[in-house]
Length: 239
Image (cartoon, rainbow, N blue to C red; front, side, top):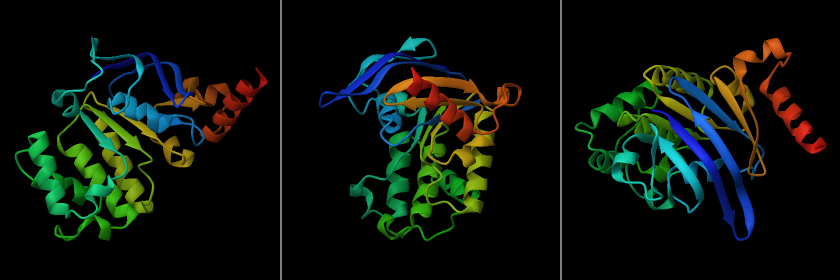
């Protein structure tokens, strides 16, 4: 898959949330989308998914997507975002069955295998409301991967995960990207991103102020994502 975004704008109640965003995402890469709270990271994901109105264009494999995303689009995308409150009363088994039906997954065991890889072994009759944040994250990630998507959107995926959970997630993401896949992660945890992402994108007040290959950091004298972020923010403030 190849994803291109052109001239993306989003205004909410008179406030510009995304402004003239132009980005390209290539396969076999993990991208880190970073920025302060309110920078527009989650809104960007929502526009990719067509969950909110926007102006601009999205191209997948060179073909423009309509503003209405069809079932074929969603079967190519895996998403990790907070569970809707309506799901809180559902059991893990019920969530599995609904997801498998919608995505056309022939066997529920595929989700269970991802849960095992992520270190979540729990009663399938447990309700979502009874799960810890970390357990919900692992379930969310397993669901996102189960239909073998081409694009993975992860909004704060490290929230609630312990050290082992983070390690397992990073391994799963590295394995995932190897097969011509794209991973886009938004996170406040720069430390967790540093050893997993290939490129970093800095979003500030709805604008892309920087995009860089992290492998070039050493030759540019950049020691960390924190340092890069502060450099870019400082440069923006000086303009």
